[in-house]
Length: 143
Image 1: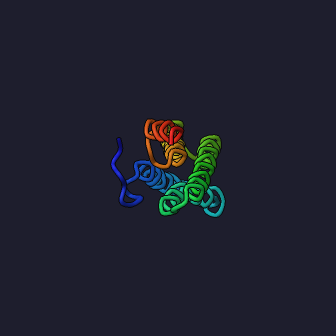
Image 2: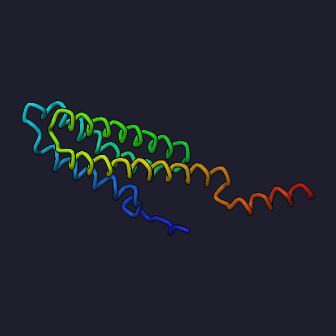
Image 3: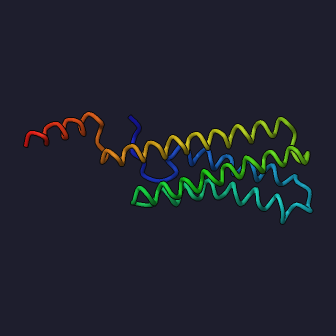
């Protein structure tokens, strides 16, 4: 059982996303200057969106609202995957840098998916365990 979080900074998925943003900034700093308003800007914006939407979703009270922001974050993560591929194909980054960035964003994507699934599953059972819900359903049948 995981401990309750008190703010977004406690979320492992946010920590991973934030590290990815830092990696993107470090990497894109070396991109050609003529990409400053092109790929550099787009890549940074998408990376920030991954982490920022986790933050915004964390504070939302409704499950649908939370999941919407996490879904936006997942979309931005896929956008980052594309920018990572494009950066490699344009030879702005090495294969090693590609592997590092790609593994980071894939990890964030997997964590986001698992986190969203857990929230959705938990909401369907009103925050109770499956056993508690089955027991409640069983007992309510007799009363």
